[in-house]
Image (cartoon, rainbow, N blue to C red; front, side):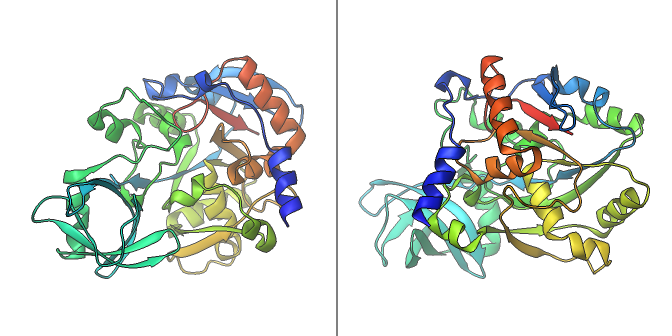
Length: 347
């Protein structure tokens, strides 16, 4: 398995100059650059998201992820006043899962204020179990007041203020709170652009998939051995399921905005086809070359980190050799990479 992991790291590695890692998004959002790639002809076009309609197939169904990023990073201190960072991951009843940096021993306490604190009551590998001294239902308001936006670890020295980060690291249609990372392909869309796409005859649907930190995690031996990835929760409403079935019946293309949408829809392809009841589900689907796509016909996505599962998903859709060729072309053309960077339309 280790040899297979080494091979994947070699096959999906590329060198990106630091200056091409975007530390703030394009503004306005739809001024971001758009690399259009046609899988049938291998042609490449360089545009902006304002020109997206010029390349979308007529009457496309575009599906977005409406998850909302929460201010999951809390700055706290120990009993000794030493600083500690709490990165919220999830909650179960009145217990909270989080990363702690630096780590705290079980029995220790982390203070947000004198009256708001967490006790460390357990640990599961790198994840700590915390018990707050307040009802868990108040966590959302605590995060809103004291938390900060969880920008990815590779975005260093961003010039954005916290107020700007909360606005700009969030899709304009985000509404279902729960993600600790943004579905970044959605960041390029303005309300005006969405209205324009609808006016041009395209349909727009939504799913919800809550992005967790696994999206940034490096591939492991376990991923390779099992063929599965980190688990994420998602929901596809009945209205979106109907839109997908109708588009398939009418032979209209289905365009996924973001890898999270791909993961949710492809994980639920049978449920969509057989009209099962909409409900929250979990997926650990690992899409890599060799995977047969059942639903999507096109993909809008950002430029991803080397050696990552997201890069492998895109390779599964457009081919590994072409992916690496297009990425090298994007670097030569000085595209901006990663979460705050530019995007691609793959057809």
